[in-house]
Length: 470
Image (cartoon, rainbow, N blue to C red; front, side, top):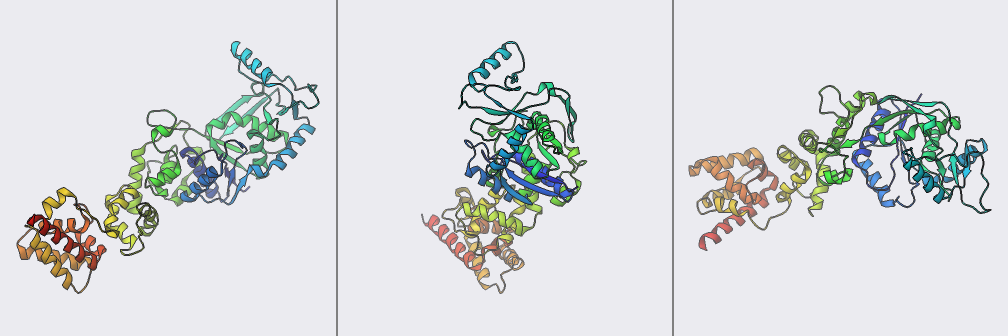
């Protein structure tokens, strides 16, 4: 048997964290077993589904690197297929027309609630009903078995038993003929030969209904795994009040996709005490049976820790590709020198996110208009002018523009003036970056380049002269 999993989001919003984790688990399971991963867009909610949401889902999947083997398939393009199945269920006695009015159903619900009964359809039209009129509207209901039980051998939750007497006859087609979720998902899973369904546990109560429809169609139900929900740090269901819940919002906040994937994998699944997992390790070690039965809490600090790790340890070229997006948001074109991967190497020890790295790297690509006031008052003074002037002379005469050569020039300047290295290096840092924070000064000066270094030293000397004369 070839393992086939699917991710089937509804395009009524962005790709949220819970959906991304479900997609990841489904993707990992398929990859581990050499199977296929299918993307299906469940867009039958015509009022709420939008093209913008579809694009957000596809963009999120691409950014995360969760490549699908088939799809995306759109349910709105399969209405003819669903209509055939609905007619088949009617012809075989597994479905029927229901003419119950909205008023009758509301009254029935009120009575059941008053009697403290579970609200459910009472089967009024189950055994045949006369249409109130020739053009009376109707829905199609699935004739659920009234005896026996449905056993779900959930790979996460274990054996879950549902009594058919607890399941009413659900609607599978609306009055306008459009199919409902529980019908479309069953047809799609059967037609697409899905062997393993991994989804949120909010779908658990749908599972016995779907299994009964699959059996009515003569199809073999897939294996089910229902993943517990994600909670915020306050123990409540994750929502916007906890911060970013959209996958692409984490891109905007400067996280590498590998960091988010690693975090999502560990959000409800573990392998011993291991915290860091490469994609290959996730594929090798992941088993849906090891997913926790209880809900997981989202910890932003843990994600930030992972972000810092991946920025430090990932291939600089890979980090640079993602960093360029954030520099672009600052209206910076990183194409000119210095090489962006070299900037990553210089900055990766001191950045937790790519947003932070981008903000701290602007001076490599753009000349700044103003110095930090405190930095300038302390480091760009008459006392530091001789050091900056001598550095300019030495830098101009250097035969090679290399970090080690630049470093030696700074040492030689400090020794010639009888100053400690920091008394020379820090004014130089302010002259180069506009502030007091940068990578090691030799690396900083090297990346800025000889021509711009000399120009910034000229600017710093002019600033000192103007403040002294003033």
